[in-house]
Image 1 (cartoon, helix red, strand yellow):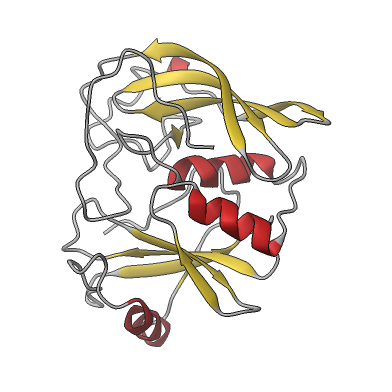
Image 2 (tube, helix red, strand yellow; image 1 turned 180 degrees about the vertical axis):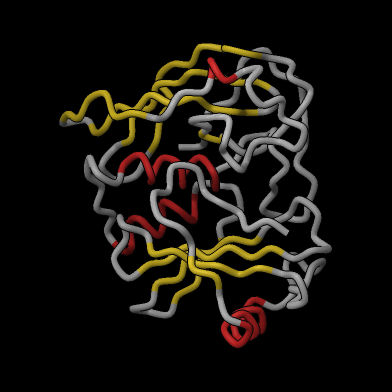
Length: 225
């Protein structure tokens, strides 16, 4: 099993020891009443979040879960554990409660985090800066669409927040998108230009065991801000 990587994170996760994984799995218990962590081959890892004091992102993968992954934010100051379920509510609630601190150094990592854990009807809004991104679907034809994958970049910082351009893999298409990341953590997609569509593959990551409805749409869905 390959450890999950969040796009645009500059430093790696720390993998839990067997004892740490056991304690955390006991705390979370059954996920959606359908999956329980298997310590034989499962992976639990964490990374401190630069924009939230005393908070770390924790991800959980288990070999029999298929494309489902558990994700939480742990506030070590309060021991509060918040599950990230694909909706924007848990992220915004944590941002407001803890007090988000965004700046030009961490905003791209934050956008990668936000797009990874806030899903549309057809799954993740994956920021893909190159052919080497580990979230790309199995069977991705390396090199074929490389020209459409560009590293995210901060193009402007103003009173309204941070303007970021990034290539986004959503559903079975790649878009070149312009985001406004507000200082309170709200994210808005201001514009998007389709670069490659009907690729016949999607990012295979879900945050809940319930099925995500897949419906054809004429326009790409927007991140739930």
